[in-house]
Length: 389
Image 1 (cartoon, rainbow, N blue to C red):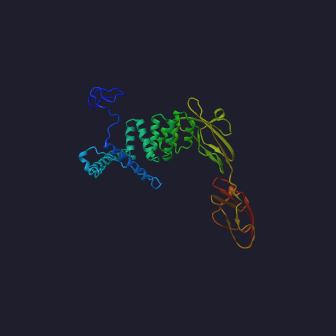
Image 2 (cartoon, rainbow, N blue to C red):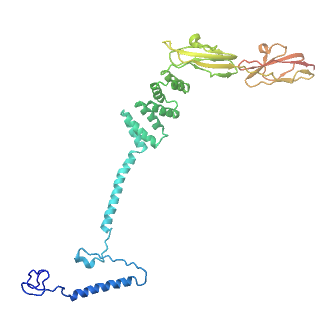
Image 3 (cartoon, rainbow, N blue to C red):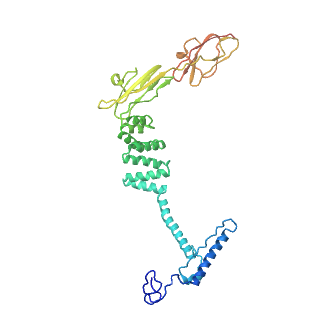
């Protein structure tokens, strides 16, 4: 502890300064101002406490946030200033930016759409194909197919390009589809036959030959595979005799049988049409090339049953007549009628019926037959007529 007067150090327990003799004051000097300030603080605190709990219900008093302005020079305007997010200048800039984006988008999108229309893509596909850029052309045809999957040009183009890039499976799919639209197009057949040959699908080539629309297409197919002979009549039932012709495209020989035996071992060399008559006939035929190789065997079964012509209908029927009458015969379409009065065969000796004819005087035997265009003869009508005027 130091002396207030001289500042000398005073030992504990001394009541005066050993240097200057000043008495020591142990209690601090009373400060009236500090006492008043302290009393004021305590009074305000008690008052707030009383006001807070005067009614017994707690009322929350929101604290007022005091904002200390950074710039004291603008203190008087701080409370009245409200910042504007979109000023006129900013709005103009935003509008200009939107317009610019729209223009750029139009410049980019419109040319893209124009370059990727159906006609545009097809033109690029054709150009690429003409330049032998087949993979590139295939991509364009695929894009065009997405725009129009029913277009014949696109479908045929895909078939050609898949063939060019040696994707024969897909080539066959699209070429068959193109063939449905244009069934007599030789170029489509050529691409399709080349594709089928590349994967050794001879069965499908045979199927194409069976459904070939004309001889020109059949001849085209024969260059890819040795076909069995074609029959001029389909297998089935017939009511008259006919001549069966066997044909094949190419310089081949044909061997055949009519008894159901194998033509490669028991066949007869075909040189003229085969007569198919009444009954059932099984014809088997095979093609042989110059190397002695045989095609598959073609088989057809024919059944010929002649038409059964009915007994001719004659009016009036036989009997005794005292007055002259006219005899008429019903002649079916495709037939002719022949008659005699003396009982002989009208097939050999008959008069061709063309119009009703008169009964003859006396006793006579009328004979009538029908003969169709295939030479089939009906049973003979016999009638005993007696005319006594």
